[in-house]
Amino acid sequence: MKAAPSLLSCDFSKMGEETVRIDKAGADFVHLDVMDGHFVPNITIGPAIISSLRKYTKLPFDVHLMIEHPLDYIDAFADAGADIITFHIESDSDAEKTIDKILSRGIKAGLVIKPATPAEAVFPYLDKLYMVLVMTVEPGFGGQSFMADMLPKVSAIKAECLKRGLDVLVEVDGGVSEKNAGLCADAGVDICVSGSTVFKSADMAKTIAELKVNS
Ligand code: DX5
Ligand code: ZN
Image (cartoon, rainbow, N blue to C red; front, side, top):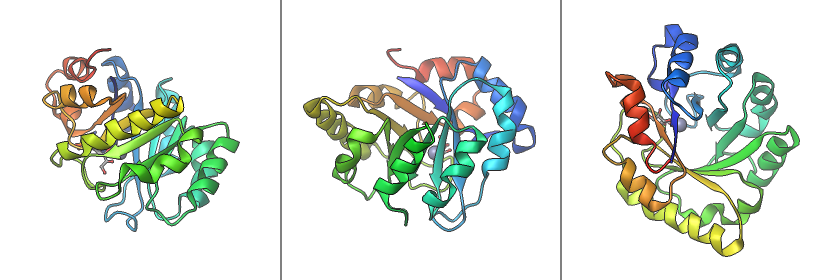
């Protein structure tokens, strides 16, 4: 399992240095949480910050859009240097059109499902996706408790992909720590996002290594 530390829990006054820190500590991706205060009740960062971070690492930028109208902002995040853009199926934008827009920019596309959304909601789109992100907390804030009852959705998505001969990665996000990383890997998770656990750690490299179960 690969690790995608989320900068949501970093020191926002030093985001460049924090990006370098997770890179040196063994991160596989940089997870960037974009919140608009509408789709979720919190406001975080936008394309200008992401663009300013691009020079600090060559790691892929995994941009998680928690915004109401993702289709309207794909160009802005593509220009900012996103490598993967994931957006919520519960957002207002048409999923097919938004995926096609992301792909037209040469970027990998991912769909995200909130805890109340079933795994089957992403099945019609799997053939165009690089990744499905299964939320293991309600989106909006770092530091919440991991919802282990979301893991059957991971297994259902992996099983559907296997049945159809598709190679789609499954990522989980929210409350992931070294304590539940094994459970995630056993369920078939390919990439885990981790914010507060990574940034609170006294030994970031050790924590990231512990998250990377079987890799
Ligand atoms: C929550 C965000 C997560 C968050 C995870 O809405 O999507 O990426 O940063 O943080 P932790 O690992 O603290 O739950
Ligand atoms: Zn996220």
